Length: 345
Image 1 (cartoon, rainbow, N blue to C red):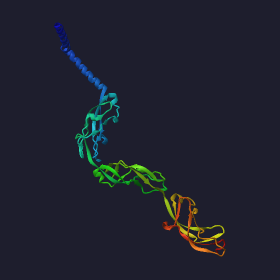
Image 2 (image 1 turned 90 degrees about the vertical axis):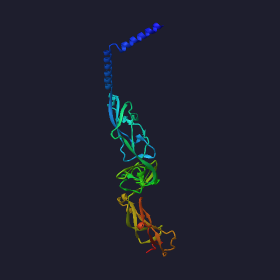
Image 3 (image 1 turned 60 degrees about the vertical axis):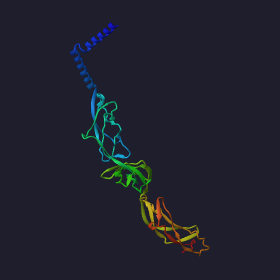
Image 4 (image 1 turned 180 degrees about the vertical axis):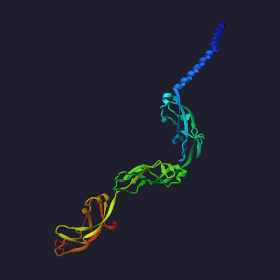
């Protein structure tokens, strides 16, 4: 048994001498060739490429009491990735993105942002390094947020057809709760809806509209958040013209009766849509008249004359045409006298 053990040790010693001691120059040469071959193969099959990538606000998780300042410029990073040479040359930038990152001890004001290799996703490639473009480092400015109740103003764009006018828009509710930077909310009394398109419309608009997330104050853009929608109503009315016209008053009486009207002409206001004013003869289709008063019975003989009594005139007009008294008053009255046919001279 002891001789077998010694024989095994002898064989192991011979093997180690062959591997480690015999022909040392040949072994060093082989190792050097293997190393050079690895460098060559690795360089031929893989490549590195550098990208410049900016953080997006959505990449940074934060508490409800903090918001990224509107004046903040998101930091950029140099990201170096490694991968197959033939693929990396045509790899789109969209495949490179940051993981959502929660800042440690985030506070109002300037916060340092540290991005590690593990914070970047590069699909099937390997992220080698990440470093800020700005040599001074990467920072994000936070501001304290608040909520407030603000009035709503409806915004529109474009115009209805030429024959129509836009009335006063309104919203329900008239006020909404919004969230934003506390200092910014103090600068505004109202918030805007998203724009409602009025291009070519001919009738009133009723629709639910979200609150715009941006407000342009001229020298700055204020960002807000609102989870509500408002119901917007925008009246769209035809353009109307008001014309003062002198028109005849006609008497409408049953057969066998006669009626005298005094005066025989009156002045009235005719309210007509602008598009109808251009229509030939629209005014000639308006008729003013009075009817036999209901309080009168038929005269007993040709010598009986009824009245005079005041009677308010009536009107017959085309659709979309309104006839009224002067200064938007009631239709005028006239005096009428009645008798049997031929009894009024």
